[in-house]
Length: 282
Image 1: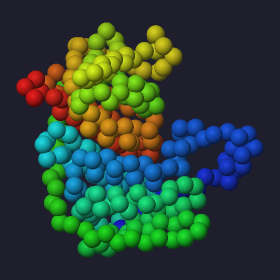
Image 2: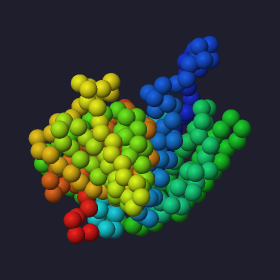
Image 3: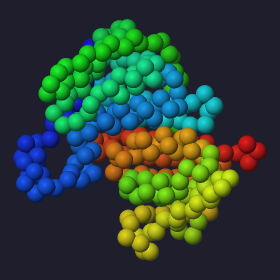
Image 4: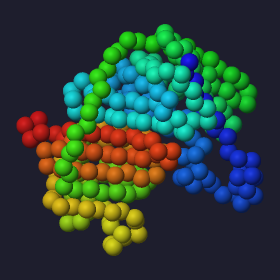
């Protein structure tokens, strides 16, 4: 038997305090009460890249790992059992899903405070059961599972020559400022800064980080060798779907290496992306 539950319930004293002060929840508070929304964004990101995926369940938690058909990007997700308000896994399971069908269910859920999200399946599952409870109603869904048999990947050590770590909110500002003017976005590490730029048919853009020495942002940059890469906007947009639910992002670049994006979750989980840059002859 596999079961998990997420309760989106803010503590009463916290809710009353915010009502008295008219204080809006900060990013960390949003992360705490919107775990179902984060899970939905993960599924949205997966569905942008592949059609079928295996979700692997063990007593330690839930993991997703896959590479797209073109071998351009790998996504690696781990949500530990402590992420959830209730988690049970009697034996390791693999849930093969038509991910776009699963996303159809996730998109109809009105995720807000005082709701609960459940997943459940048997030890030899043919179906995944989904339940969503609000203060007004309970909704149940059943999804037929697939035999996908996706590969597992060992990630080798990669030598990066540039690394930057920043708040995810700052990363999203940079990404938005760079715009959607071209099919690819250039990420450049040089002169102790990270630059995002695009060169479209009509518009070009460049956004440069300010380090803690030159600006108010807490951005840490370590560059041993200048490097510039181009990656598809398709994959950059996938990354931004989940970035807002994670406190920080670590971005690593290297010569003849994939671009690595690491998002650590508060409960000890992670959402990682490896994206192969555009080759000169493409």
